[in-house]
Length: 502
Image 1 (tube, one colour):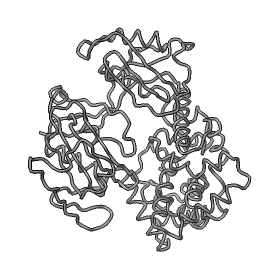
Image 2 (image 1 turned 60 degrees about the horizontal axis):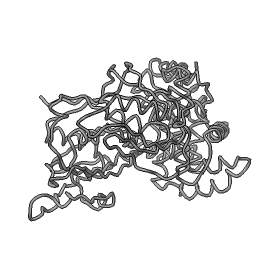
Image 3 (image 1 turned 120 degrees about the vertical axis):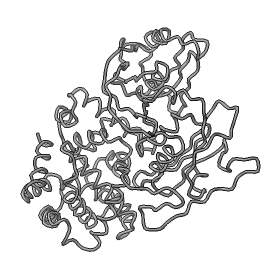
Image 4 (image 1 turned 135 degrees about the vertical axis):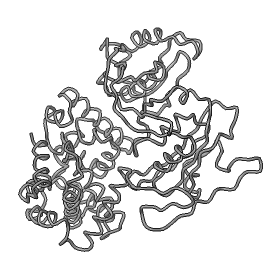
């Protein structure tokens, strides 16, 4: 299997310094890396330089990559981040050249779908979680079968099929919001047929020679690019050390930024403690990190606004009347995946606390790490991610012909609504429903329906209030109205384990 071969070759290079093994890796993946760079910059010379930098980075970081690394996906992500570094550095007017490239070269012998998709593809890929991105790269960039994709991801063929299908649906939704209407089948065909093209014949040889020397013979601009790309990669993985206190030293340079508190209101509290906060407000505030008891009493609702640029390790957020678990979820989220569900395991006294907090983080970089540090400092809590085998409920299709499973024609975004005895939502698949059910049943609910089409539901059952839960009524409503059932099971689940600092 090719991906196993990748890891064997990588180990040969790491353990024995085999230039032949590294050359084989370059030959296998150079077209993909070059194509990503060319698509993002629109300039063949720039794409060659980015490709060179990517494989130098691989040579330098090879000892740090785990034995289970999915190298194909890792190289795709590194190519994208390196190209982002290149473009943001303004090297050789890359952005303008990219626009010109998309207007001309892509129109030659390309399908209309690919012409529309190509300029958006890598931004859409950046929005996928790591496993979904690996699945797309393996299936459509590398041309692997679903069985091979599953083997690489540690899953069976059916699970790989579902994973790829869901990832395609996410790409389709991303394109649709930007005016590109297509189907997942067309998108799959366009990516498979056009995403990877041949790199210049001599590129693999020159890349290998410079990369095995760890970039010692690379030009000054390439070394600068490598340095910048390594910074972005470190930021993306949240491994930069952030010093929080009177001043903060930011990874982008050696400048020390002093954190200045906003002036207090006369009646106590800070000027940022307002209910009508907006994302635009975050960008106007000075660098600040703080968690305080709420100053907005007698309200049952909370509010969170945030800004996130994962590639630059930028995260800003402001929360009002947040429960302690919501502050934790905000701080320990994965950059770029703010809507992913974070399940918390913690002592009951922590999760049942009635205390509410207002918090703010507006640092230029390292915001998530700084917020975690502040939680430890002010609340005495620390979290860590663990995979735990636990009891779950599996959401499955019981009656495939149920009218409730028919696709909806609703196009507008409708916010999900939960009330006693009612769940209303528009969802592509069942992600939102699974999350709502999880909050009712107080245990993980996993979507095993395999359906990704759009639905509108107004699920109702007999339940007068939140205090008197009617879970049997909810289960029956799922079955009668949607043709779905909840099946008990046991699965490994990623959890945020929260403990008091000793």
